[in-house]
Image (cartoon, rainbow, N blue to C red):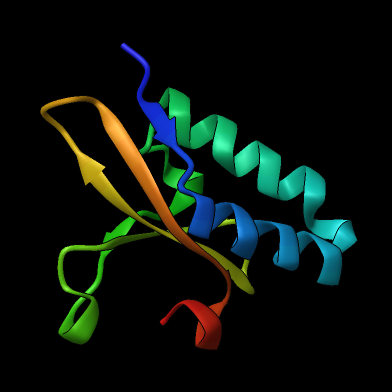
Length: 91
């Protein structure tokens, strides 16, 4: 059963800003979202739990430089997207 991606207004603004700054990342970004929806535990996403002030969030990789942070809600099969950007931006 696929997961449902939840795009908040705040996330959409962040994603729009990210894609304006990095237009070459559009296809890798969309590929990461498709994988996330189909199987959030796909090895290429390198999903891992965050610690410290971001405890409760998960992170997945778009590529070596860029990440998406999210909440993974198993009960409702939802993935609530939080932020997208480079390591320093999302952490």
